[in-house]
Length: 175
Image 1 (spheres, rainbow, N blue to C red):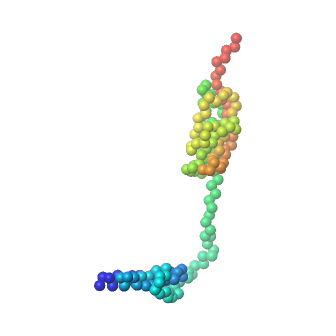
Image 2: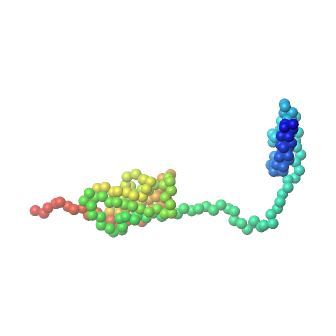
């Protein structure tokens, strides 16, 4: 009795779902070894094709042709700027240390790296944050800039160059 009820429920559900599959594939029916009806979209020897009537369709009364359904490509235009030291600043440090920090806009995402350049030469390796410490910088005028690198190493954005002057006290005495 329960077995027959299950078959009836299956047939009712299949009848309700059949219009959904009508346009996409053919449906076949056969009985398995236990005598249960089996419905499938794959033919089997002895299976009969189920005739599916035209599916019910409802047409909308709203004109969707004016909608822009193309996905929008978001252009991420990054901007890099050096916030410390300021342009034309004098750094007074006898050890020659300079603290450099930068700002990346709009958002610093995972996979991006920053390369610092000191006098047009890469300073150490690219890193995942925008704070650097330059060590043992010689006296005189220097220029720094930052480059934002993609995960593939391509330069996405660069900062404007910043000039700073390193002032280190000399212990040379005049005779």
